[in-house]
Length: 324
Image (cartoon, rainbow, N blue to C red; front, side):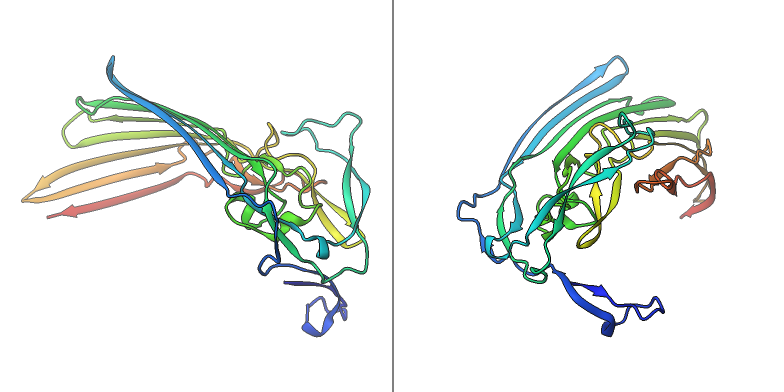
């Protein structure tokens, strides 16, 4: 990819002939290999147990730990490393909604201005990340076998995924096994150590079912998920142009997007007539009609934490199934 100055003619439409001076070149294969490159190593430990009949329940437990050492990443090669000068950028801070308010109302962030003259000469070196990626998980479940007219299933999980990833929608933001050139940019690596997006920390469900009479079944499930880790980012006006900076580490322990909880219900009735089974069912999704935001704008400013995606509102589905 080639990033260039846009010499707009005023119509606001990018055209090939409006490309100006080259600002940066990204992508392509790596150009050098670190002389001390080491092989990545996965280490895993898992344990669990299952116990029948703890009162009316079956009980199960599982725990796992996983860590990845020496994962591959890229840095600028010595003969193709753009020159940067360190600078300070004023960050006004968050608004306290899921992020600790900075005392005094702001902070200074370290950023890097690129020295003109090395545009388009980027070269990359394949090397190892300096710190390990970690994953810890724990799951518990109490499950009542369906041997009577009612049953219940209670399950919960706690987990953490921690690693170093650059800012932006890049492959190695969520997948530490993929190499991406953004890992070489010192501005993209600001506050890079944090929780990966899938690391919601806590999840649980309560599943209940009843069959009071033959053919009639009532089932409900209550689900809870913690919010996704996020980082508030600031658009800084640097020498190389507007640059996004991560102002805080992702999800350590805040900020996070809002938690997500829904309650769904199904009522189904089955009857057989002349060798044909008729099943009619009514499904109600998000019975409580919660309108929680599950994705928010994480840009610094007045739009911070503005809702971008909401839990779908209450919905009903009525169906009839014939089986012969």
